[in-house]
Image (tube, rainbow, N blue to C red; front, side, top):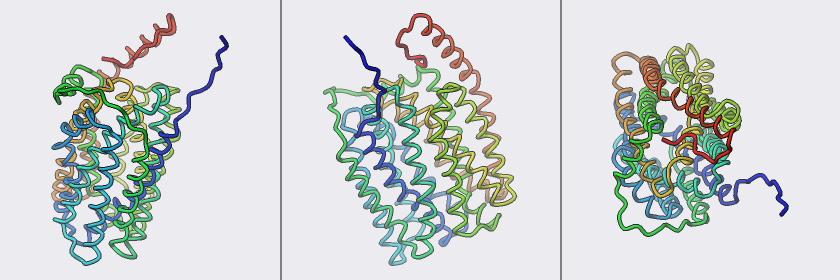
Amino acid sequence: MTRTNVAPRLSRAYWRSWWAAGISNVGDGAFAAAVPLLTVTITHDPRLMSLVAAAMYLPWLLLSLHAGALIDRRDPVGLMWRSQAIQAVIVGVVAVLAVVGHVDIFVLVCAAFGLGACDVVFSIAAQANLADIVAKSLLHKANGNQQTAVTVGKQFLGPPLGGLLFAVAAALPFGLDAVTFAASAVLVSTLPRRRRPVVEHRPIADGLRWLAQHRLLRTLAILLGVNAFCGQVGNVVLVLLATQTLRIDTAGYGLLLACAAIGSVLGGLLNARIIEKIGALPALLTALGTNVVVFVGIGLSPNGFVLGSMLAVNGFVVTLWNIVVISLRQETVPTELFGRVSSVYKMVGWGLIPLGALTGGLVAHLLGLRAPYLAAGGLRGIALLLAAPTLFHAMRDQSRLATDADSDSPDRDVLSA
């Protein structure tokens, strides 16, 4: 029998998912730029501003476990498009309230919580669905492309557009986000559906037990928790650092976010090749170490040029982290447990973000607007030192199993527990 070597390709379903991500994240980027600008028109108190950021991520702490169990027993595509439809309604309401001038901190906090709750369901379902429609050999490439789509929309196109629209009318960025959510929901609804095996009982604790027994993923979840906490400690005051300390105007703030996007886009395009060349875990260590230096650099930035450069590097290494870790979960976690394990992972990893937002606001209030980034960079460095032995151990295991594979060519999962 004659064999032909045909390289596997990403499916049409994947590219529909890719376009949906790109469309919705253009609106999300406009929203991300408009919310802090709108908040600044209401208050300059960093403590109040931190409430909005905290509300956006609080659902990851409160709802993740239940969302993961739901995704393991339901079709992820249906959950994805329904959650986006609800998000369209939420931001549409904010747009209407902005038109009539009835937006305050309470409204923004409620809207942020609702959008965050929907994002919990959508994000976990989207990663589960991607693992269904993409071959394992293409996961790094697929996740890299997906990160590029997210970044181009959410950080490159969306923020400058959001800043421009906000300058015309405060409601316009929110209206745009509502339209893109609705368009993405329609596109997602056309994706192929997965038939789920009928299982009478799916304990949430199964995901917790599985993750607790997997040394590498368990360590990465905890490390993500510390890094996400630190990231929010700094990022919650970014708009104040830019506009008050460095005297950057509204349009310039949007361009700063675009600098981060440029780094993330380059990361999405190049990081799969970097991972292939040096290995997943060495790439991960490089990203984590660079990120420590970058956060200190952001805190010490003397002007907008340096700040924009630091944000660009940060975008590149964060994308590298995301591609490695998301692909690792998709390769390693059993399909029937993916939702629950991912929900536990995200709860551990993102559950401290609300506390990070509140901490950042308090630190900025007490010590100044540069202090949150400096403190966050130091804490990230300590966390990396503590996690390094586990990461080096996993690298040695990976190298040993790769050597064994060269000898007898078994099909192995080199990153399993």
